[in-house]
Length: 224
Image (tube, rainbow, N blue to C red; front, side, top):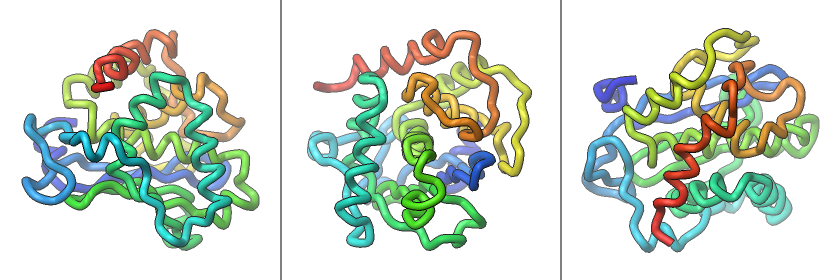
């Protein structure tokens, strides 16, 4: 995805549909010069010390019990992924999604000048899709890490390391670099611990550890 495409609109979206796959649409754009999201290089988001020290903001509709499993999902990721999530979580608000409002999706990541949001269909994730909680949460956070921390050249390198092919099922845009990244980020972050039916069916890189090495290096470079 080139920089012009990234500048087309400030919209990120990744969604997980039933037992099949993620539905998604994500265009990257320059953050505005005002608001919470700003940029110096035109491709990644500035993370202030204040934002770095903060954690997720939870909408009142997200119950204490929901917060427990959301944070447990994040606690399951490898340390390098946890550091990347910690770098951006102060920019993220987690909100409940009305079931069926996103065409059957159970997760949606989006962003604007005021920050990022992750909307989750809590009713379904607390019912028939309990087993998909970790994948849904980590996939959406993969989109935010992509937008906030990964520039065009790095995204192209990550995409080149993911084989082509595989079935999308009911998923939309699963052949797009942003979706291939988020899907593979979840596999890497969760060390492949994804239930049958999770994700897009994007093929696994020959070495998921090798694919994720640049993410480990990025993690190590972050301010402590």
